[in-house]
Length: 171
Image (cartoon, rainbow, N blue to C red; front, side, top):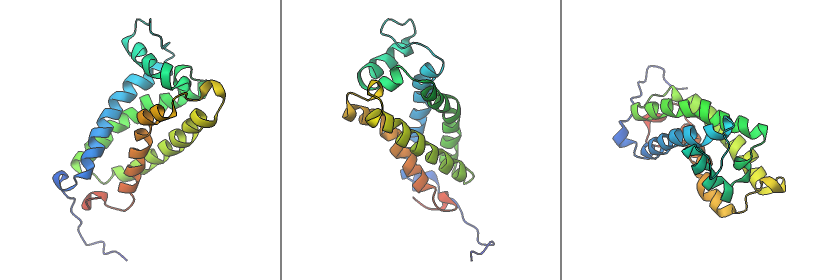
C-alpha cells in the first residue's frame, strides 16, 4: 500500500522531454480541429470554387484522399463536431496541463485518448478502408500519412497517463 504521506513532486518540463511532442502535436491539433473539422460539421460545402478559403483547403485534401470527409454522412458530422467543438477546447487545456505538470488532466486524457482510438482509429478508419465504396480512401498510404498521427499520438498519451502522478516521472 502506498504511503499517503509520501510527497511526489512533479518533474519540470525540461526533465519530461517527451511531453514536448505532446505539446507541439496538441497545439497543432487545436488549430487543425478548428480549421478542418468545423467545415464539414457546419455543413460548409468543400469545393475548389468556394468563397471560403478553408473549404477550398479542405477540398484539396479530401477530394484526393478522403471521400468520407468530402461528403460526410450525418454520423461523420458528429465525429467532426466532436473534434471541432469538444476535443479542440480540450487540446488547449491539455497543453496547459502538460506544460505545468498538472496531474488532474490524467483521467480526462485517458478518456479522450480512448475515444479517439475507438471512434477515429476503429470506426472512421474502418469505413475508410473496409466500408462502402463511395467512402473508401483511394490512397490508403496518403490517408494514413495525414491521419495516423491523430490516432497514434493520443494512444501514446494514454500510455503516458497510465499510472498515477504522471508528471512525477519522465514517461
